[in-house]
Image (cartoon, rainbow over all chains, first blue to last red; front, side):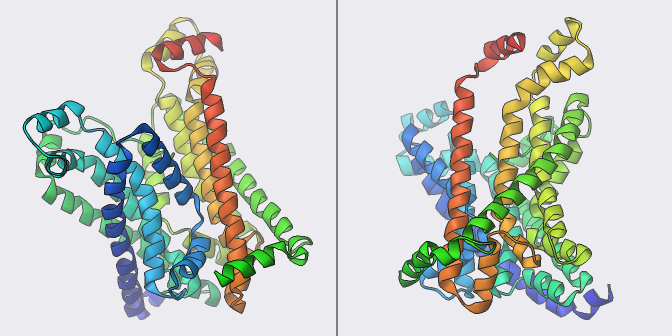
Length: 227
Length: 231
């Protein structure tokens, strides 16, 4: 505990750096994954191909990707761009599946009704399909954010500043408190981002809150079995 | 591109392929870590998951543990146990089992939980004991979800096993950490290619096995019932 108090500014600085690696990656993943999922959903074969490619991309181990990516991008290994790009790639791979399922779950009749009312493809997507898929998309983004935040520490092995540095430094110097602080702080950042997303969800999807209040949360949350 | 050519040459160099520090031996090590960790996770996770699924109690434990496990940084768990158990295989192995456990647990549990209540009631009405219901009805019907869980934990361990080398154990991570320290990019890239190939190969193999297994299985509620009678 004394270690934590003595090094509070180090922890806070690392936590801040951690957040600024994770947040851009989460935002980029979401913005890239949703259009890909929308296009992939058009045909059976395109959905199959895109989801398989995403699964394969997600299967790539993180440390090798952190090493290979700079050679492809031409960025230095220790640059934050490299880390954000790698995290973004994983994020897209994870989010595409959630987004494809979320968009697919919107009632086809509703979409047909929108078309019949004269909505064009873009407006129908933005003002009908996207809001209706909102809650499912939010659930996907929450999984995405937790996994991104907990993936960041691996970049510390390359020397990039984040809470992961507490883990490597603590291990090399044999300070258990530092490693523990790194783990706890990472979980705290993950929780904070998750709470932020829930708050954002309430703001953007106000009708959802009214509905869950009415249905008194009867449906249990699904158990996560990553396919 | 230059690095890629050098990495390829490094891979093809017979001096790097064989021997106790060669790619071959390290790949086998890597795969054995994955197998052992997944097997231990199955030994622990399947009975617990079945018990929870059959009794329909403790659901919150499963949900909370899978969520918490996702938030935990793997590197943190590996280094923490590294400090606790010292340099060697124990620390990463414990960490990998912890990583693999939630998916197996969730797979075992949700497979049993997902069996329709009337199917279980029918089995009970036919005079099956609770044990018979579990072994002859719930376990066969829950098998696809269990296999899905085992698959995702095996893939996760395979991907994370590179970190074992950070605390002094073997596996393909050896080349990555050695390369990081000596600025040997071709070697790092070569080892990365092998790990990525291994992971993608494993994913494709699982997918293929899954498809072949599903082909023989009946689908839908009618299929569910007939498969119960069949077993």
